[in-house]
Length: 214
Image 1: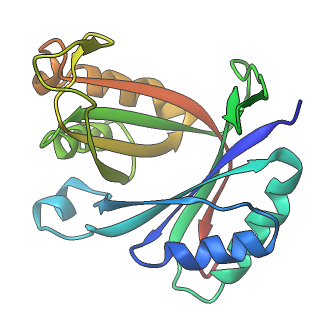
Image 2: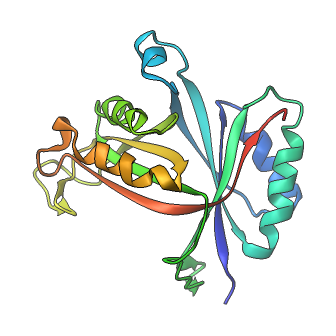
């Protein structure tokens, strides 16, 4: 079976299409662009309203053997942009359903990487509180994607969480040695003490790199 990777790039808003075009010229079949907002890397900047901007989050599923040339093409197309223009990293996929066929069954539980992606899904309005707690435990910035639940508030629960329409999904990439502290800080938030207020999960990150001038 083919092994697949999820290649994730985060860049300023309206720049994602350019990255996808470059990736497709290097063998990628296409991608999905989500719109989110970047959060400041410090609590002081956040209080002052600095460091927040609209972002494009580009998701591309690629075969393992195609990952390197596609990632190289993205790095090349952003090489003249400002320093820290964006970031790109890879996440391992398990099973992939494509065109009615199931591909890839990777067990990545024991993968050793330098970074971890922490994803937190909370009811709308709480992502900034989660980010502030994560920063206090050593995280840098994060990206928030607006989302929605799939049912009414009175309908079923998902992992014990009320499925309500308005959600925020916070994505953070942190060094693996800070993962435990960041997760503990999130867990101890008063706004998340009530059952069903949010969920969080982690996954290993490969090949993390910043985009733009080095």
